Length: 273
Length: 250
Image (cartoon, rainbow over all chains, first blue to last red; front, side, top):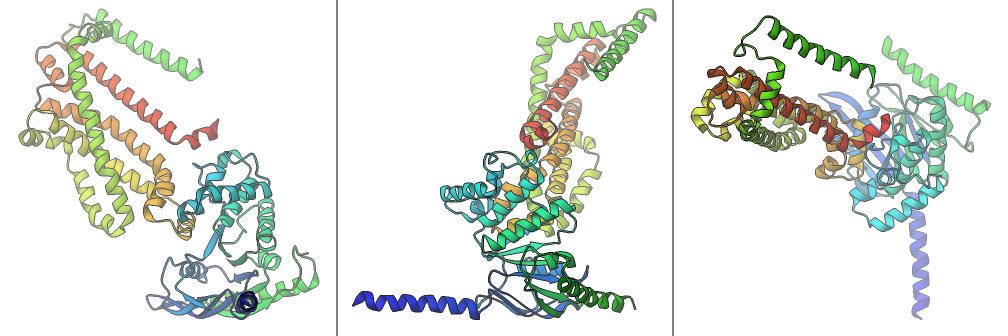
C-alpha cells in the first residue's frame, strides 16, 4: 500500500522536474539594463539560454560585451531587469556558472592536479572525492601521468585539457566563455573548439559565449543572438540545426554567415555616418 | 670558467694591483691610503675587535628589514583590498619619501638614544617604501581573467590572496626587497655615525678620528661582505620561493 502510493509520487516528481526543465529555460534574462553616467550600455536586454545548448551572443567590438559579462557574473550591478535561473530569480551567475577563457589560466606555481582542484579547494568540497573525480577526468582527457607536472612543463594542448578539467570540477551546469578564441593561433584554436564541443556533448554542459567572431559562432553555436552597437540590443536570434562538428563550406552556413555579417556591418556603417 | 668570469676576475686583480702598486711607488702614507694587502691583513687580524660591532650592525639591519616587512606587507594588502585606502595614503607615502631620511638621523638619536632602536627604525623607514610599492604593484598586475576565475570559484579575499595574488606578486616583492636590503645597510651605518655606542658605523668614526685608515677600510670590507651575503641570501630565497620560474629556464 505504502509502496503503491510512493511510486506515483516519484513519477510525479520526475514529471514535474522534466516539465520544469522544459518550461523554464536554464537562464532567462529579461529587461537587463546598465548605464554608466547616463550613458546607456544596454537597456531592455532579453535572452534565454536553454539546457545543454550552446548559446552565442555576437556583437561588434566595443558594443558593451564585457560590461554584460561583468553584470552577468556579478562584478558590477545592473540598473534594472532580472535574471532567472530555472524559474528562480537570481542576482547574478556568480555561484551558478563555471568559467573558461581562451587562455588556460593555469597557475604556474601549482601542479596540473592542484590547478584542476582549485574550484574544489575554494568551494570547500570533500578533498578525497574531488581528487578521485579529477584523476578520472585526467584519464579521460589523456593527462594521466602528468598530474604532478607544472603547467610550463607540458604542451599548450595539455594545458587546455587541464583547464577543461578545472571547468568540470566547478560542478556547475552552465559554462561562461569569456572573449573569443580569435587571438589564438589556428591549431590551438581548433583544439580548444573541439574541447568546447566535448564539454557540451559528453559532459552535458550548457555553454554561453560572448564573442565578436562570426566563424566561431557558426562552428559552435546552437542559438546565436546578434547584438547591435551601443546601446546594445538584440537584433535577431538565429537557431542552427546542423550537427556538430560542422563543415564550413555548406551553403546554408555561408548564407547564415552572410546574414550575420550584414546585420553587424549595418551597425558599423551607422556608427561611422 | 666562462669568459665573463675570467674578465671580472682580471678586472678585480688589476684594480687591486694598481692600488697596491701606486701606494708603494708614490709612497702614500698608510694613514692616507693603506694598500689592499694591509687592509686585508687588518680585516683579519682585527676581526676580534670588528666582529661584535658587525654583530650589532647586522642585527640592526635584520631587525630593520623585519620591521619594514611587518608594516609593508599588511599595508600593501590593505591598500590593495581597499582602493580608497590607497588613494588616501599615497600622498603621505610619497611625501615620506621626499623627506631625506638620512637627515632624520640626528633626531632619531635625540628621540631614541644611542641604542639599536633608532638605527633599526632608520633602516626600516628607508626600505619600507620600495617594498610596499613593489608589493602593491605586484598585486595589481594580476590579470583580470584570473580575478574573474577566482570570483566565480567563490574564493574569498584571503583565499584569493593565498592562492593567487601573493604568489603572483612574489617576483615584484623580491625586486623591492633586493633594493631594500642594500639600502638598509646604509641606513644602519649612517644611524651609527650620528650617535651610537656600538656597531660598524661607530667603529669607523672612531678609527677615522684616530687616523687608523686601514681599520676604516677593513670595516668597509666587512660591511660590503655583509651586504653581499644579504643580497645573495635574498637571491637564494627568491629562487626557492619562485621555483616555477627557475625550472622554466632549465
